[in-house]
Image (cartoon, rainbow, N blue to C red):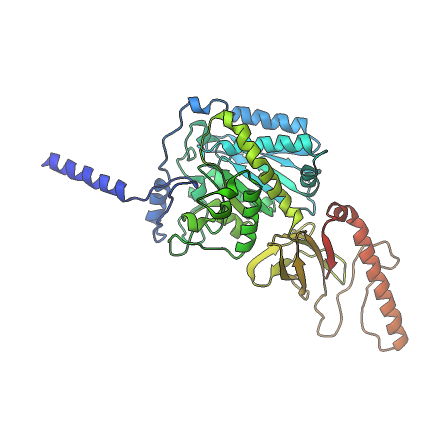
Length: 491
């Protein structure tokens, strides 16, 4: 009887293994996850399901790739060699305590500017190491060429580029997909459809590091580098009913535009027979849940792509120069798109001339972009070739809307918001700091009934306002010169 029970148990577990959906990387494999109803028992099951992996590559195949220590040394050497345009910092540590090193590249690294920021992340899965190699090559190429290549110069002078070559150094060291806790980091983020990763206590240190990073740094766009296919993947990654079909996010057109920038700049990605134009909607390919891409867009205000850059997850090191050559222009063009297209600008108050931390929305797109708290600059990526109704708002001020036709170049649109009038007809007082005499006095304390005083006051207001505009233009003259190809308007 005991032998019969043993046979039944073996048959039962065999059946379970056959019926469970295969779990693979975001690559050329089926990865359809069938989440449960969000109850606590499913949380643990899901994390164990995600732990299934492909066989580890042989040790011989890893020869020629940088070890974690090699990568750390190379990044430190890079920031010494290119100290004028870079800095090195860590956003946290892996499960086993290895620092998650980041290189920032900018003409003013470490400073906050009215410029967009972009991040590249590699090696999310430990057995997909090509990204970490390419990202260090990207950093070195920019360092070697930013004084002589216009594209590299544009990136250094107009973007803050952050490069995290390895999010999963522990998985890389043992040639396995998951981290040291056997969790897939690209299934560990809070999900919009299923609350299977809402328990903060269970979230991995690498995941928490990314989430904290986005709270501290405002990124306009980003991309993660994966392996196992050749395609540019964009949101949404999952669907509400867990089925496989095209499910676009509010900025679907913009994401398709960004994905095509990468694909068409690539040597052969856009020629794919499997993916039209070399791009794909994630849910249309195969749904996943708890992914980094969707979380970035929803919670980080960051437009992220998932880039599959090599059909082979772990190609021989001798192939890396060719893969780099195929991807170099794509990687550069994607970063440069932050300043070459879209609508950019700042928000100010009319009464005080001060920057306002407002919001920017586009009619017909259910997505809000926040202006930076310090410099109140906003960067709204949009697909070109269309007319957009753009509205800026801030509490206590009347919203302003302008129509913008976005062509091949970026548009700079600065908004000047009018304060809401009080019930007694008075406007807010001005505290602007400009070089004009008496500019610090109230612009309009009350409406004078006398005609002469009214005319005089109107002239004073006009002069002060022109003074404010002139001062602001001079102050940001350099910023405008950097983006001289943009069409500028003030609303």
